[in-house]
Length: 131
Length: 419
Image (tube, rainbow over all chains, first blue to last red; front, side):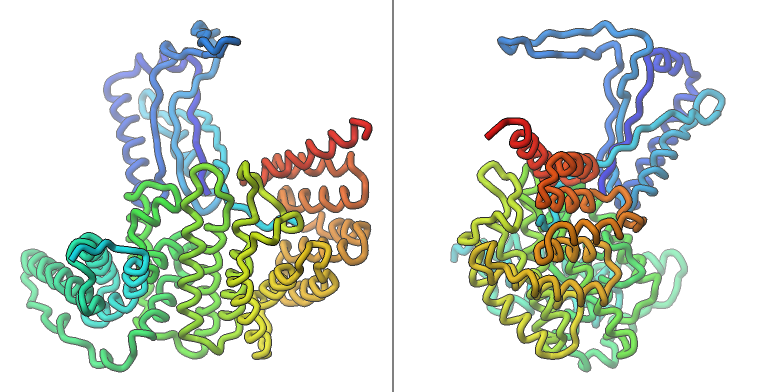
């Protein structure tokens, strides 16, 4: 079963992260890199991407004639998707375990961040027999 | 010669895979490396045979290429060990073991299946390893079927091989005491592979139909090796009788069509005939099992010319037997449907109420889907709509969700708009 693990944060959190020390930033990336390597080696890795920063985010709607109407000024409190992991695991518990690892990445001074990670199962095309 | 690797050569390659692996493993006693060498030989054949033609002795050709790869691998290993430990050359590794001539190629396919479906492996690893080592599929093909990156699938296969190595399973048929239980694990993995492929053709899942074909092919080869085993015959029959309805399971917009609304003219009569012959022969052997009973249910459905001709009392009797044999909640749900078809929806709903307390069905969409269906039969459309929607919110299957929402929409239209 496949799950997507969504890492979200408000713009304030992103700003705070930019003020981290070089060591803290490096430690955080080394942690995630190690986790990605583990997931590849366990045969569970499907994909991971980080998204461009919230400053570049736009919300687009299609007008009646199909032209895009963009909106890009968001309240400070808005949560943005920062990045995601897709894993193929044997149980929901294992997906939660991986999410907890993502969440527990080190922040300033090596203190665990405990970021909230939203875990969602990805739908599939298999079916059983219907009456 | 200008031949391409047509479908029959592709089948030839895949059918030869377990025989070649058996021969290489027997000679070198290193399952993980032998399996890699055979995979390389298969890939070389797939590239070379279309250009140069299929060799006169394809099996010998593959064994020779795989042996060469293995020899390179062993030389590399020996050089590495010499560098590391200056240990003596372990040339005895290259000598054929004393039992080399004792077992046949045919046993090899079975032995490999027993190894790949070892209970120490998770089902996802067993499935991947079985498809590669016994099915002769490439890592890329398996990765594509499961929609994961090739590197991930390669890791999954290599970990599975390491687990087998660590478990120390000997390369021989299991002892007669453990054989029945190990065979059950093999059949379960084949059944799971079939179910992985049993999908609607919606979106990116189109290529998964291939998995049902592979499961049928592998089960066919087990049946050829163990023709007297009733459950093997039962599983093959179940696959064929289910696969026979494939073309009728989806409509023009790829929407799911339930069994009782399918256009039966689209069912594959050749598969139905083969499945019925198999299940008839299996049941006559007298050792009834769950696959045979499920195949018998499928056969009763497939034999009905129109949905209304379905022999529901017989299906109900078969589910009564299945219920006694296994404690599977899905069997209980199907039993409730059959009971409703024979004794009316009230009886089916009563049986469902007894399942409400089963923790295995708590929040399971299938319980709500069946309840919705029976409530609709009973004429309680409002409650049916509610349960169709609850079920739609609980399934993780896209085609099932779409089907359930469509049922709720159809009922709410007919309930609110006067005819």
